[in-house]
Length: 70
Image (tube, rainbow, N blue to C red; front, side, top):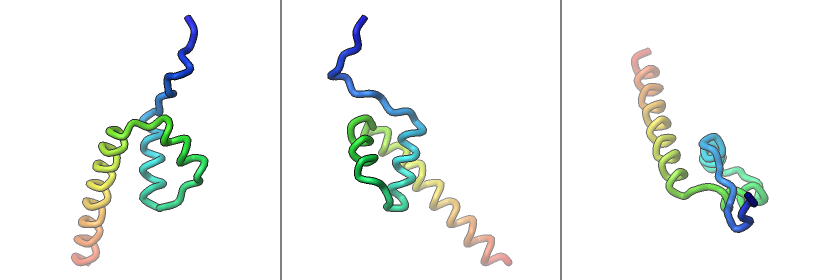
């Protein structure tokens, strides 16, 4: 059984989370960005980014409620 060189290596969930996290900060090496383009699934990126935005917004709402209540 030989490996098909045309198949792209698949990224793990953690790789997708890291790529989305770096994009939230806006800092990423070009080499790492090019590597991510080759192995990340766009649908996974959208799903993880959507979840990250929800967590971020809920965190901000909770922080504001805490500060206003104090």
